[in-house]
Image 1 (cartoon, one colour):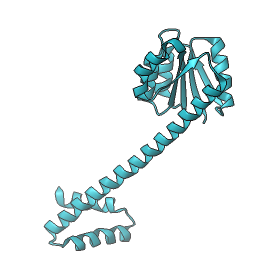
Image 2 (cartoon, rainbow, N blue to C red; image 1 turned 90 degrees about the horizontal axis):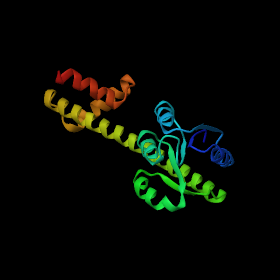
Image 3 (tube, rainbow, N blue to C red; image 1 turned 120 degrees about the vertical axis):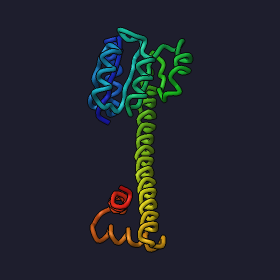
Length: 189
């Protein structure tokens, strides 16, 4: 938990939120007052958490929170007045933005930060797992294609083609995917 972007139109509230974030374990809190500058920062940097304290100097802030959720892997908290919280939640809830009402209640805010942080970590873990599964699936597809090519051009059986690819991978210290790509390049060009 290192980087937080705090976007707040109020200097007084920025100080309060910064203090609460530091109490929650965040070391670096970068503050800006405008949505336009926040958009540039989000595109150029990676943040663990983005807190948008509405209203901002140049916009309300819910559009920024939606953009941030789509453009980054950060957890997003939107702070707004209680009388509009329900409407704002309807607009940003689909995007995974956590709405916190003000005036801020220290235990509730810290609990929201903890929840958003835990949810972000879980999401990142799921994305890593998904990436590994996609890589494995691609490897299986390539190896199966290479086996079909070996069966077609070298009249191997499926077990022989499988064994050939495994042995080539061990002998050349390559992955089965690399061997399969080499076979496909040799026979399909």
